[in-house]
Length: 456
Image 1 (tube, rainbow, N blue to C red):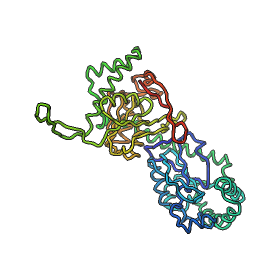
Image 2: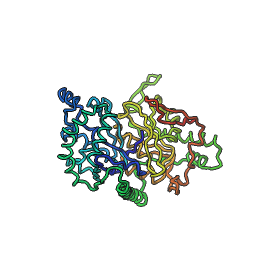
Image 3: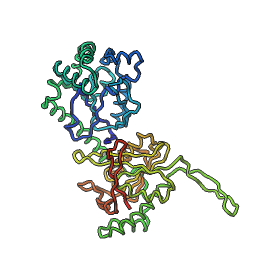
Image 4: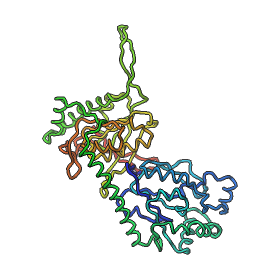
């Protein structure tokens, strides 16, 4: 699973019927096909019988669930995750299990009816019509339906002559005038593809620069946000920082004093949990007026890998706390964070969530993690981002994107170096100072999904 939930609108590129743009660009993209939103799940028994005999018209606009398609694209453009149906071309039905798709920098929507709905057209930033010779279209359909979908050649030709070709002439070909770009000779036209990729790149860079300018302006002109809470800088806290920031500190001392500081940080974070008055009776028979936690549950979520170093401190002060994990890594080409692994406890939506990372520099990974939690219906005001050390840019970025998230740290450093490391910071290899061993998490399909480093 690789995804990139966004905090800004995505660029929607529409290709008809298919154009491979995402393989030519460094930005994270997500592909959405209109056949996944077919209304096959509501076919009556009579319609299913017609479909089995190739007598049901799947090439009519009425066979497409445009309402679901529009709502899905709108959510993806907002950077939200969606669930899309998986269509079975053999049974002409939707599967019971739907597929999770996360927002991306580029959303490629493809399908023969891409331009058939006015509301859908308004969501498309770039409309591309890929034209191909009718003989080539027929050959492609024969190859696909016979080899992939298990249909016989007579049934394919019958369906093509009865439904496919008339539908193209009536509904698809006239929409060519709505396209921003018409690509002749199909997907093999490399000159046209290069021009499209260049335009997509320029649009993404413009959007990226505008967002970065807003964040930079906020950092220079605005005070630190009110949602930020910094652990009181007592002599003990300053002493611990002195030790872990000192490059001469030994590995054992670094681990020991880092854990001490993490424990103080977690205990400070717990003071922001909701509480209610309660009365208990002491062993001496007297009443004591105190308070208790006023919430459903507490869940800790580590941003892997360095966020795992804070789990022992959380477990030490929260009995039976549930733990989730999010693996986010930076794309070396685009510099954008990407979601590679996600494991969250069930029924997390009502819990208060402590999101843990050892350091926050730009805030990109933290914002993606918050976005994932929101996609799982965790309330924004129930999320606490807890980090040992943060840069001002990261604080402003998170607060700008999610103003209700509580940000808690032991210190805020002023700047970042050219490699986006916190300055003065505690070093770029924080997690390397912890002894570790690696294990592999395997999905139900037998494929390795995540290599995890466990810290001791």
